[in-house]
Length: 159
Image (tube, rainbow, N blue to C red; front, top):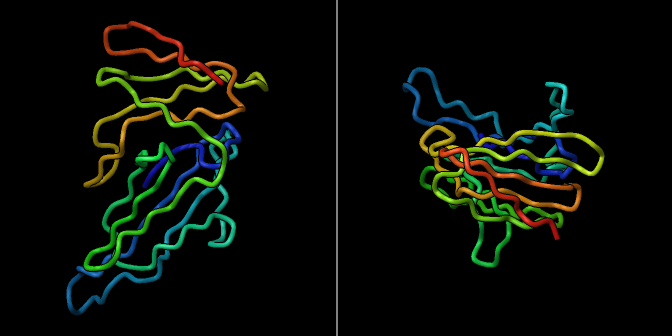
């Protein structure tokens, strides 16, 4: 799973990769999942999106799902499938990924609509997966303040 604000509404969303072909012979494989995006409403509720709404389609034996910053600075999701192709999904909205420093722990994000959120940064954020450490800056944000493990803060410029 990868959790982030994929649609730029200031609410966390979830993208999942699944299926498991490595079960016992008598059980058969778990093969009814083609990936899924859950759109968050900011109140703890999530609404499943169709493949057409989300663009997420990962039909194989899913093993990992991570967010990475591409060489061109684009926000990408990489989904691996055992003995199959890796699928890469590019975020299709205007965004500006900013690399984090090694000791950065969290950011306080203030949005133009008055909403305030806290985004924490981890090492090893999913089962057998490690996403790149970056924060995605977009036009809905008014300010972003990052705090490191020593308590030092810095503002990330919003263009």
